[in-house]
Amino acid sequence: MSADGNTVTLKKFQGQYAFPDYAHENWHRQNAQEAGVGVVLDLETTGLSSTNDKVIEIALRKFRFNRLNGDVVSIDPPYVALQDPGVPLSARIQAITGLTDELLRGNNIDWLRVET
Image (tube, rainbow, N blue to C red):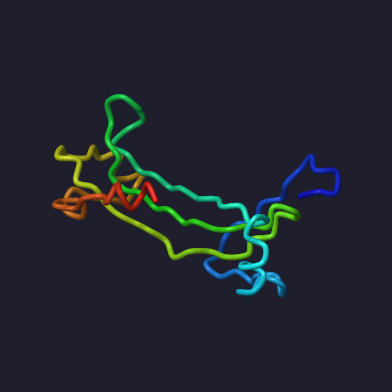
C-alpha cells in the first residue's frame, strides 16, 4: 500500500514467497488482531451465464496479511478441485479451460471445505 493509502501494488504470485523477517510464529500469536485474511479464487465454469452454467473447477489459496502495512505474512496450501457438471463441455470451454469431459468425469468439489 502506498504511504497515502490510495494505491496498492499487486505482484504476480510465482509459487514461492519470501515473508517479512518479523512474520514468525511469535508474531502471529502476539498480533492476531493485526492479521487480516484474504483468499485468492480461480473459478472455471461451463459457460458465461451465472444462472445457467455450472462450476467445473475451483482453486482457492487463503493467506494472511498484516493489516498495518499490507505485508503477506503466511500462505496456506491451495485447495483445487474439479466438478463433473453432468453435461458435455463445449469445444469452446474445453479450449478456454484446458479441461475435458474425461478429466471431470466422477469428480466433486467439497463445498464444505470451500466454505471454511
